[in-house]
Length: 228
Image 1 (cartoon, rainbow, N blue to C red):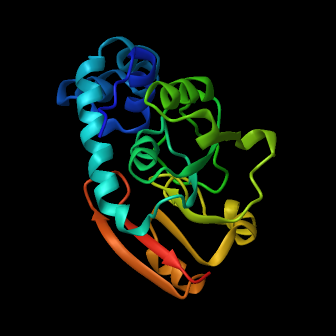
Image 2 (tube, rainbow, N blue to C red):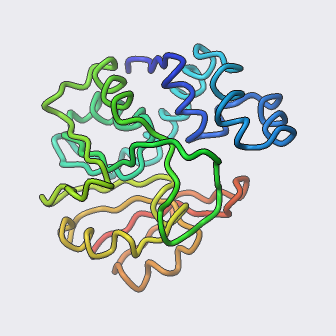
């Protein structure tokens, strides 16, 4: 697969979205100087884009390896809170999927790693997301980006919906519950990280845990849900 290469702007976004991409020293600086200073200065100027690119490519490759058995060629994929889209680029490279993105188009002034029911936080730039996708070989006809705040979400049925460390990790599933009921088929697959996997047993007939993460701020599990 083609390696993912991030410029400084995109690497900055990736670091805000995935703190594990940083080196230990930068993580310590975040604790010392606070998250606002980390967002505005440290994560913007004290990073090595080449090192972040290497770490990011490995991380996204590992993420693909974990979920690729649930994907198939030409399946319609919806990604909610994808970040800069590295996983989706690798999915497109391997399966030639059309991918729809639902994102927010701003960077919060202060990073919050809490869980809420309003989805008030965001760390993305939709222009940079589009540029990154195209730069890494995804053709324009193979993706579409939707701004969550413009209320024009895609209405077609999807085969696979992916929301890693976003839906029901940073904000409540109920924000999307009615919408997902419209765009999911009974056989559609939903893959997400959640702090409450047992909750989804009430919504889906089949819930499979494929990853347990106890090293992050939230103790979470990645689940695969089917039979809506």
